[in-house]
Length: 426
Image (tube, rainbow, N blue to C red; front, side, top):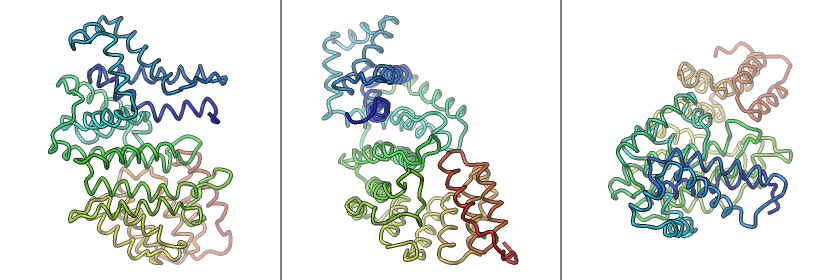
C-alpha cells in the first residue's frame, strides 16, 4: 500500500486484467469477449477515478472484480440475456456468483488463463491474429503497442482483432483446453506472444519509462504457468523462460539513479541478479533437446553475456556462431542487425557494414532507428565523426520513445569532434 493510487491502478490493470477477461469470458462465452474487455477496461478507469485521492479499498483486487462483474451483469440484463444464459446452464444467479468466485480464486486462475491462451491461439486464426489477440486480450496491450511489435499499423491490428473475434464467435469456440496434440500445435503462437510481451517490457516502445518491469514479470509468470503444466512444459517453453530470466536478471542495471537507460557496455554488472541468472541457467539446462528452437539459441546468447565480466571479455565469436544458427533457423532482419553488432564488437567492422547493407533495403526496417544507430556506431569506431553524427541525427528523427531519443542525444554528445578518418570505403 506504499504505492500511489495511480501506481496501484497500473499494477492491477496489468495483473488483474487477464484474470478478469479470462474468467468472465469463460463464464459468458467467447462471443462476448469484446464486451468483457470493454467492461474490464471501464472498471480500471473507474478505479483510477475512485482511488485518485487516496480513497483506496482494503482489497483492491476484489474491488475491481466486483465492479467489473456488476458492470457486465448490468449490460447483459439490459440485453435480456443474463438470466436466460444462466438458466440454460441450469444455474441461478447465486450459483453463477459462486462459480465466478471459485474461478477467480488464486488456485484456479492458471486454468482459466491457459484456456484463454489457447482460445486466442485457435488454428482458425492466422498466426499474426493469434499473437495480436493474445496481446490484446490477455496482456491489455494497446493497438499501437501491438502494431509496433508486429510492425503493422494500429488500424490494421484493430481490423485483424475484430475479424479474429468474429471468427471465434461464429464457430462457437469455447474456453476448453484442446487435446494434447492440439495444445502442441498452438504453443508456437503463445510463445511468440509472450516473447513480444517481455520485449515490450524490456525496452518499451513508448511512454516515459524505458523499462516496464511489470510486463516482464507478467510474461515470465505466464510462461512459468506453461512450464508447470505437464503437457506444455516443452523444451522450447523452458528455453523461453530461461531467456526471460537471463534478461530479467539485468533489468535493475539497465537504469541509472535518475532512471535513464544504460546500454550494455555502460552497465554495472555487479548489479546483475546472480540468483536469477542461476535460476535461468537451471531452466536452460532443463530445456535440452535434440530439437533446438530459436529460444534455445537466444537464451544461449544471453547466457554468454552473463558469463562475461565486462563487454571486452565477452565471447563474441561464440555469439556470432549462435546468431549464424539462429538466422539459418528463422530468418529475421533484427537477428542480422544484432549479428552486425556482434561482428563489430569482435573487431570486424567490414563484415558488420556488409551485414548492414544486406538488411537496409528491407521495408520493415526502413524506419527502424536502431539500424542507423548501429551504422553510426560503426562510423564512430572508424573515427568518421561526421558520418556517425549524420546517422545519429537520422535515428533521432525516427525514434518513437523519449528514452530512445535520450540515448541517441547522449551518443551525439560523446562523438569526438576532432580529426576524422574518412578514407575507409563503407
